Image (cartoon, rainbow, N blue to C red; front, side, top):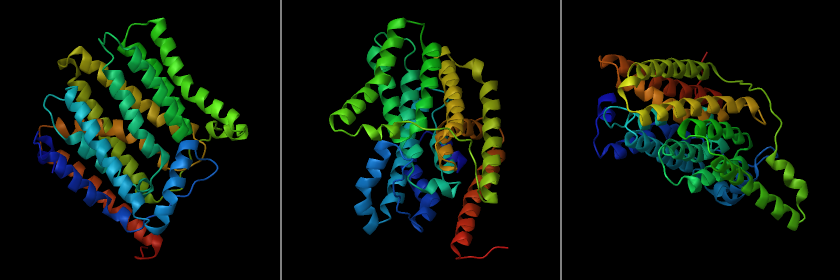
Length: 335
């Protein structure tokens, strides 16, 4: 499996789709109708309201949307990595790693706000890494700020990705006050239009939906969730080790891209600590940058057996998590 996705073969995108279907097949067995709650952000609540009529009669629409969304994200981030030449040769290991990681936890079977905004943050990161050397970046910087604020209307703590913008601009470009002001205007614009709409429609009281009170993350998860976290942590650390070993062989732009990826990972790990509610769904934001480091752990080792062992251990955790879900549903009974 590693060898297949390590090769730059055009039909690997189709193989990624098959891989995603196989890994996420358990999510179709117990589809959940996702209902909005008071803690949900405005746009996410609106999306769930739109889906409710179709979802009530056809609950499979939720895992189907998750499958399509995660597959699209996997192909997209894999394409970005190949275009930026972050590895010596183009490959599909990042896409494979992303689909594998997002299938390891049953909490990530659900259509959540962080899963949706991951698309926006992958886009933000891709734009930041291309700012280096761009002659007319003002439109791009405005759009980065604008869509980061839009993401906060889907998942409120996502506003923490302002850190990614601020530090990312510092890494990608020399300081220019006008560019920073344009980014700030982009950040403010969605809030301005939303506040204007609330005022004109006499709904000012709903303004609370764009604010949040932080809570420390608390997880009441089964054993296999923590086994999965340990496996991902080990593979990510291993991947970072190999990436750092090969960093100096890369051009300056590629090294800046890696720096921004480290920053993306750090912010994504930080976000659950400023969440509105407790749970494990929100850690999926870290899956995209983690998948690139995991790809490094699969790509660089000279001995092919070692990455294969890691891969099949992670697949085994996916299976164990599914069995634990069956046990929770009372279909199988484990001691």
